[in-house]
Length: 119
Image (cartoon, rainbow, N blue to C red; front, side):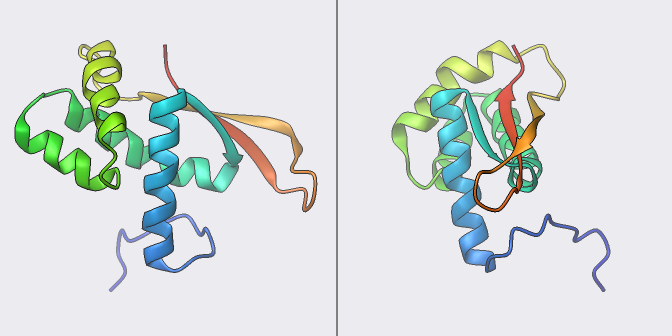
């Protein structure tokens, strides 16, 4: 049965979906805010929030888990644990926000959004 297996449809294979979410999570950690389609933002939000929750407790095991989930990107893991997670130490959740843009993408008019960390 498929109970509680809902995922946002990105239109890719599962391996490409994992790779896409990993790369988008790395970009949001590096830049703080990215612009992509609304569906990808909504799919990325729980992925990034789990990473921030993991990074709030700085242990070797948590660093290794984050390292594997961020595609072995050492600089992103370092920035996540040293810069981003300490800002959310007292916050229980809701580390990211999704802001819809009024205009669509210039080729196919896909709905676009920004996803960023809450300040």
